[in-house]
Image (cartoon, rainbow, N blue to C red; front, side):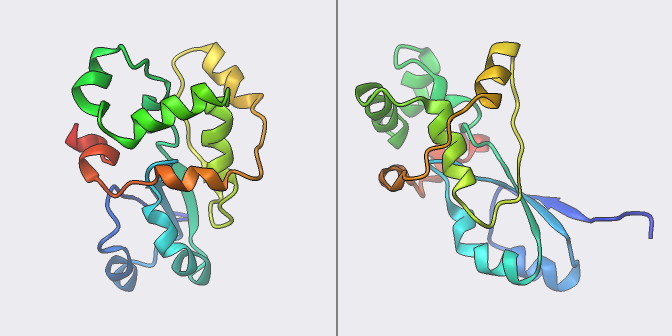
Amino acid sequence: KLFRKLGLSVYSFGNIKKVYRFLKFDAIQIPLNIFDNRGDKFKNFFVKKDIEVHARSIFLQGCIFLNKNDNIFNNYFKKTKLSEFLDFSKKNKLNKYNLAISHILNKEYVNKIIVGVHNYSQLNQILNFKHYKKIYFLKKFNSTNLKFIDPRRW
């Protein structure tokens, strides 16, 4: 009775149900963003077991704000869905903060969002975002390529 809640933080989803059988956790922190939607496969499990879901890496470790001229972009992301997304958001004049946050808020199984910022301007963008309710078009950016969506592999 030392803790009110027990939680996990995961990168991969393979053993979540097995772990739950042995360790009844109350919360889970998962990577979730426009490109990485692996958590969606477990939404019924999370809801049924009343597990609180905290979405992290909603900006793909800040990569959605890269410029296509940046070295890191050319080294890791040139031929990925990120490149397509950057072109799409620029062409359609869509705010990337708004898209990323709205994508998460539109998932009914997510309870909290964890973000990191480098400065006040970024925090201000997050706090003043505009919620887009109809963003079905983002589905085309979903990826299962772990070399792209898992920062440990960059």
